[in-house]
Image (cartoon, rainbow, N blue to C red; front, side, top):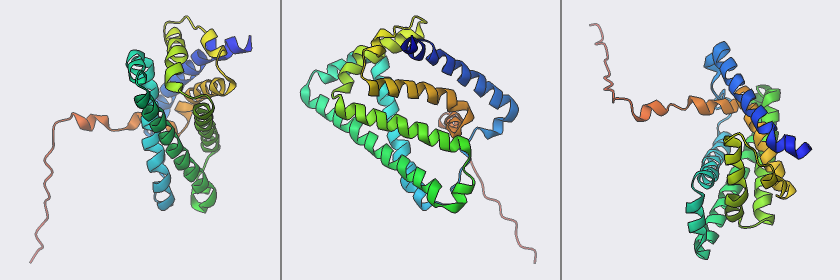
Length: 225
């Protein structure tokens, strides 16, 4: 009964909370769609934490998305042992890199007095949930090898069953505890998304990629004689 709720109901609840929360935040304070940068308070540790975290998390999320959308391609890649080893090794290396980046960011908020003062309760909650997500993901990769192979046999069909509003929770209940915690934690992150710094993902200026180019001219007034 509990697993039916966690994997058959909770993902929808989290998604509704996210959508309503995003609409509420946009209507009440659309200018808060940012990460509230603390770079001016402390920059050195931010660099060593932010760079591996952002590059790592983007690539890891894309790898998950690739497995959901193109499972046949993943299966073809895994058909050659060397490619499977490279894929698994790269994914683990990226996960470790983003873990290091996240730990640096957490330590930064604890060590730097200025940053600690500006840290909210939601910041702490978010960091704990993110750390849990990364750790459970890494432990799953270490103890239950060849995740890219069994991912497309379990998580991919489960995801599409959610998308079609006919959740097949048996795919998730058959997985080990670490994988279940990883999935549940992801739903929690979805629910927290509109109320945390994660919302800055929606403010990335992607429009700059296709807008017409602009000519910027520097005009300096002549000094009066």
